[in-house]
Length: 74
Image 1 (cartoon, rainbow, N blue to C red):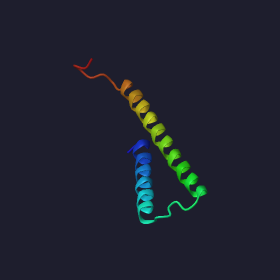
Image 2: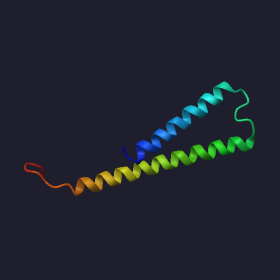
Image 3: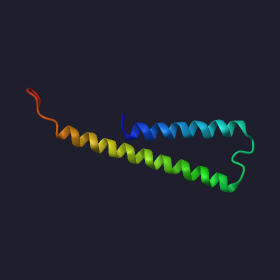
Image 4: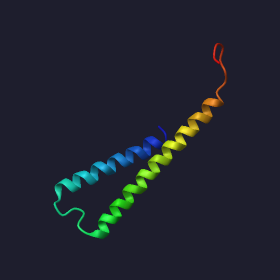
């Protein structure tokens, strides 16, 4: 498990939770302040998930370049 799996999972749970609450309540989110807070948290989670994906990709690329060569590989 890596950082992207964790952040992607948190983002997915957040999205489902917000969707469920929104479908159950006609007045959701209730106020402009709550709406801005929800958008801010959502945007932050998206940015963190994307950053984790980039970091994980770079980390895997670096570890692959340091892997020892085996017979028959180029």
